[in-house]
Length: 92
Image (cartoon, rainbow, N blue to C red; front, side, top):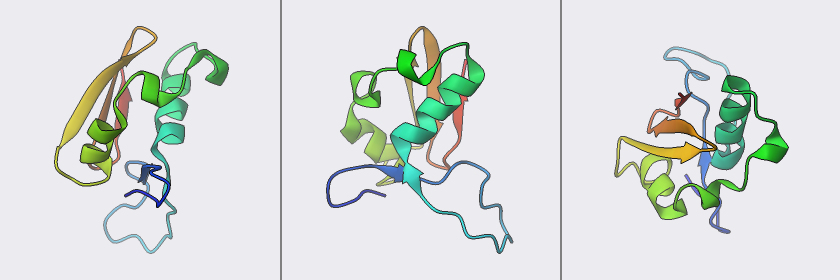
């Protein structure tokens, strides 16, 4: 999902499980990814550059926006980040 200004949005993985009546709001993909990196590492938000410096926006949009790809992996500060079309973000 993307906005008119080109921002890619995603719903955090597992946030809206099947059968859930809970409303879940899409968030900028960059925020979701940075939050996952910070939570899984000893990095602070200030240590992580703009997501566009790690992954091409069109490639990320193909996964979380357009659904053309199932997943994408890229490196952030020495950690492999994988984002899936379901909104799951894993950091290794």
